[in-house]
Image: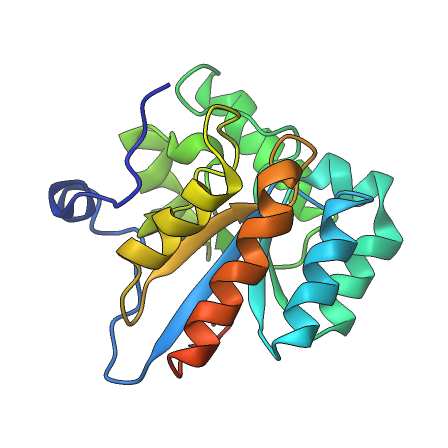
Length: 206
């Protein structure tokens, strides 16, 4: 399995219409959680964020919102933001443009947000340009990947991925999902503790 823990500058430059980080002078970072809501992982994330007075942005799958509406509502009640992550977690490289756009619109019935993140970060140039030109979506990618989805790494390695690569303005990805939970359960509190001790705040993506 190949992936970048720290997004290369060339990729950011090539897809400059996407939001990869939010630079600023203040020590702010932007936690994001993909693929929820999940009946176990999401409540754990919400409770953990609350302990550290941290806010985050949740990129939700429409189908999961339909299946777990109360958990989705709790995300919003706790003061976090949400974003569209398609209805069925579609890979934009593997489906037709028509299917991809229809799936985003289906998710929009359940997720009221102008933020969109393509699953796997995979979106064609045409799909990206179309969304930017014809919708009010802001396309949010990431600066740091925790890799909590990777069953071959430990929770400690997952936390180190974040701690060693995050800077002011970084957008960080975790996953509130079944697959990631084994690593997320230890890595998230460790990261929150580290950045709190180093005077960072955790903000939503506006």
